[in-house]
Length: 433
Image 1 (cartoon, rainbow, N blue to C red):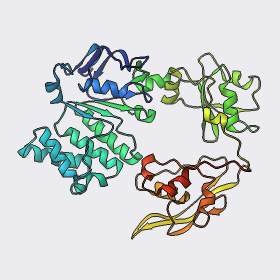
Image 2: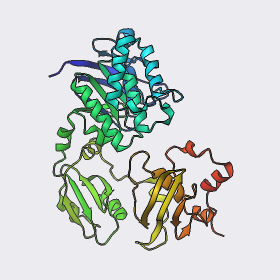
Image 3: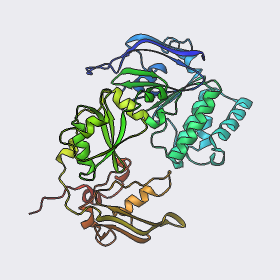
């Protein structure tokens, strides 16, 4: 067993106006030498806990020990050995990569030969060596996170707190971040990685699962997943579409949770339920039901009590769209957009049919947002066509936008457009007649 370097005894935090504590009395021990995941949905208490461990928030009850230091009473000693990377790290976007590193080295009093060796090691470790002269604001999301990690590591901390570092990072950059963090943990560093992504949690040796301020589970993700053996199924029906099939299934007392997964419905059964119970349930159509390997997500949702009979409030008020299943509603034909000599998209072709959820997958800079903007009429293609309901966005953009809803990565990113265009995009359609 590796050395225990963080211990919590009854640690509690409340905020004024909240019915429940942000962090309920929490007891746990966190070890060094591997990555521990702090896992839970938004509002679970993850950031509050990290801020208490970093000495940025004072607990209302209980106590915490980090490397033997009290985060409040021994803050100077703790900050010398602790690195904390919050959700929005304090990079100066008008400074270069090297200028940011120099700034954090100054703050940590890392000077001379030690600074040079530290920078050389960190630039090689993060693969940022070729970009030392680039402004931080011009880096991709993944590169910004790598720079943030490098700045946090300048002081060579023994404890590293990472608050949702994978948010907004493409899969390739996220994988590189994980490789770096696992290497640090292998060198004996304690790493606490906060996340709401359950696929990230599965990469941790140990996890703390939190919800509404309470610790629900501590242990290996695999051990919790194994408790779901024989309870995860994929269901389909030749008689009913997946949305209605899911609604029927969620009303059954034997079902803990369900979701649409590809062309099937994924069901999580309660402990006492069997596949026969589902097949023979009153009101269920003819179905195919096959057992599938459980996922960590299945175990987590089941631990929260499942979805019960809850249905989407939005889904309950949406009207059924007229049209034929299989009808083409969105089409890209040789869609190309160039900025000078740079091709952001190059002869892109795809078709989306009615009733489909169609995914555009790729790393940062792949051209996903550029494609979306052309499909919404916000960018004019250099060549090719973007069609919505057979309407060319280049010719009939106003008419086509009446049938479109567009949610950007960040709402503020489109505030640069003129108010008139902004209102045209988001104005509600008036009822016919």
